[in-house]
Length: 82
Image (cartoon, rainbow, N blue to C red; front, top):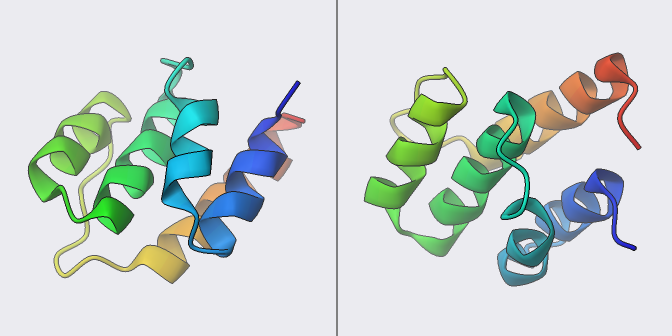
């Protein structure tokens, strides 16, 4: 079974589609943030904004994908999520 660490690795490698398959089933704040990053990478900023709102975060303008992935990884580690 794929984990959020797997999703983050896919995001770091630019494979938003593989990451999307993992995060789309999670509606938590962190899962929603990851989902927002996926859609930012995809170029669907309208959908990304929706997921950022669900994550209670502001969508960076302009998008800061690498910084967002790094911050997401730190947040997952701090939360102890595998």
